[in-house]
Image (cartoon, rainbow, N blue to C red; front, side):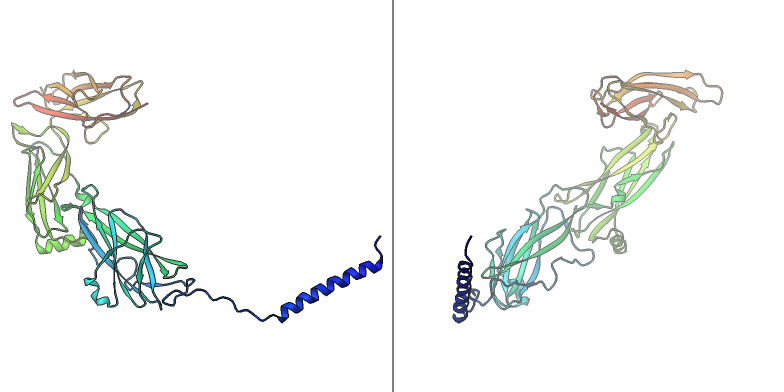
Length: 422
């Protein structure tokens, strides 16, 4: 065991050491903290800079503007101002689309922005463009649309992220510049007019539909409309829109209408006994073509049903045969009735189409019974997709074709649809 005298001496030594250190510290002259390095221009590296965009960072279009023809080029300038007391750097952090290019021009006079000398601004996290105090200019966002042309409008939002930082480094401010644009076809039709549905056509019947076609980018063009296959039962005409009609269409379509036409389509069940439409559902393309090779044609679908001497009794109000979903392994079969109010009529099976590419087969077409006086003639049509057929939808335009015998004969087309599951 240590003696009490030794413990006392140890305590005294520790107290003396602490007192000495305290004396030395209090007697030393104070040393001021080292100031942060200040780069040329006087901006501290730790300072957060601010860039002002007088007209905002999201481009605001005037009403009806912001629509451009597909495959066009264009640009918009975002004004900016360095309101800091010293120089800053501006750089490009990211852009949303490869189709866009970014450039920058500097000036101390915003009124001279149109005459600026621009330099490209590439995506670079390390290197930017030096902007002096009180200096400003424009960041130009340019585009070139290279996507495939389509009959529909396509809206996009071009976005670039710009960084700003004190010349000597420090924290960064990020600004997102947004430019909404809509690319439109040179020839335009309202979406609700892309498919025109006609009332049913009966013997010697005619039906007419009218729609508008216009351009938001071309002030003048000629227009021709015709049924694509050249069917003479379709008659088309184009009439230029008046100024009043153009203004009304601008309100409805919410777009500029620089030039436009009213297109009238008249469909006749027959022109004479030798020129008649096929019985059953139809869908025909009306092709709209301008006189300019740079304006791609567009089409409108005209659909309807021709009713005649023979009616197909199915669940499809348009006269088609619906097989619905069925097992590809087991196949499917269906029998439908055909009726006619005309006595003495005769039917003949022509073919199943598309020939060579559909598994659909007709088992039989037979007349059921001799009609009583004033009654109906009836037939039974049986068809099937055999077991083991490929899975998936039946080929497009699958149908059974029949002929009403006579002079001249009349053809009937009965569409067939179905989906084979695995």
